[in-house]
Image (tube, rainbow, N blue to C red; front, side, top):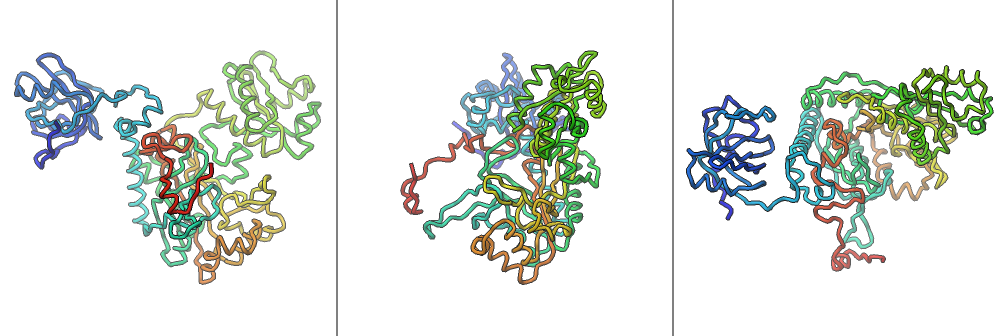
Length: 592
């Protein structure tokens, strides 16, 4: 039977805090049993809490009733122990408390435990399905405990930093009007208004802009956001962002403010100095050089264009691509010929086709003479010119794609990341930050055959692009900026449109009718008619920042109760069928 917790059971120390300086002190610790070792006349229990492990010792000097109680303890029992700290006779250098132990003279079992479905805290690999179905046990692992602690520390530093810089923390609604923000909304039916829906916010975007119109000047919120989109390692359907907005601020002001937070966060949480100001790179530069708007610059493989070198060769794949307005580009993997065998290149070719490329040409220089997949279409001089243009040497491999740039660049961008991992050339423990700026405002949607906003329709275009809104939408660049860390987009932000007439021009350029504008954004357009300060802001992914700082592979490792690939939560069984009575009250019928 579980023993009752009393006031006298209060802990004096956490398990992982004890050291040689505590020898001789009487202490009280509380936690879970990591393991129990019965050596006959000697019993040891490793007691674990969120700070670490300490050894409890029971021997011939221990009261017999306490010794017998210790004998029956098993893994994951919840205990309270009191006693005197003493030096361990057998030191364990693998844990911080390995020099000491507690000679227990008072022991309480608060809760017994069944044998868990997997061992907690042993480092043994557990299947995701089993671990997530018993997430409350999985979370007891020291690795996840540390990740969740670090996530807390990041949030703490964020609040302290932005408070000190004059920001108010203001909550915005969780039940809002559906507005298009690039992903599907999670909708919530209204009982009081049959047939009407709330949406869960994809971000607090409109509300934080309205707060600037309300005169609050600097807003901050650690905001919960929701997007009904396909999951991946760095995406969950519900996530948290450090959301801010600033009035009377330039793009540089907002970027500098966020850099200050990152600098302080890395220093306080990891003890690492981040160099500021961070590197800047335009969207066009990022795509041309790395094939991605969130490049991992720890990998120094760059995309090189060789269109001029091959425009007159006899290889139709190259010449046709150039004639159709595309290009021929390549990446060079140095000293990769031994790793990138013909079989491996075939795998990369299939991957390229999966992205959208029609194929993958290559030059593999493993022996005296380079092996070129399209050599029969070239003269020796033309091949030599290509090799010289790419700066290749013996041992290198060049991977080449020819097509429209919208295919070539992202394909090579993906391949450079895959190849870098195969070659193991990405340095660990290095943090490469950069800002990506001057994104295109519009992107062409081939399905609907009209222009969509690449970010959101409230973003301010660059001044020099205003005259091109209607005449040449594809050339319009925006006053927006993304912070990228090691290939992960951490933050996205922009300067906002504050002129209601310009905002209406923007809606018109996106093909919205007057009725659609009034229905979706009428309240916002009206608000801007009553005096709007220039303002801008950003949203930084707290989960993603924690993931990168922890060195985790997935957001699952920094979220307490994550969803899996199909957006379900295995432990609780969410989502679940709705009660028919509740559906009736909401005037909802389920279509089979």
